[in-house]
Length: 120
Image (tube, rainbow, N blue to C red; front, side, top):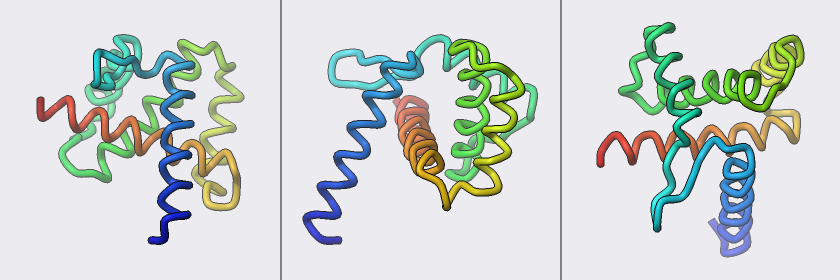
C-alpha cells in the first residue's frame, strides 16, 4: 500500500470514529474507545436473540452490522421502514454505493472496539 492510500485509510477511519462519536455509538475513555452503554445493550440483545457466536471476525462484523441498524432505529429515531430499506440496500448494493463504504468502515471500527474490549 502506498503512503497516499495509507493516508486515505487513516482519514476514513478518523472520520468514521468522529461519526460514531456523534451518533453516540462509541465514547472515549482516556486513550481508549469504548462502545457506548446504549450500543453495548443493543449488541448484547442482538447476540442473545440471534444466537450470534461472536467468536470469529465474520460473526463479529455481522453482529456489529445488525446492531448498528437497530441502534439507528432505536436511538437515532430512524423510522423502521427506512432502516429496513437501508439494510436491504446495504446487503444488495453495498459495494456500489458511497453509503455502503461508510457503513462498512463503521462496522469495521465497531468490530475492532468490540474485539479489543472483549480481550481487555
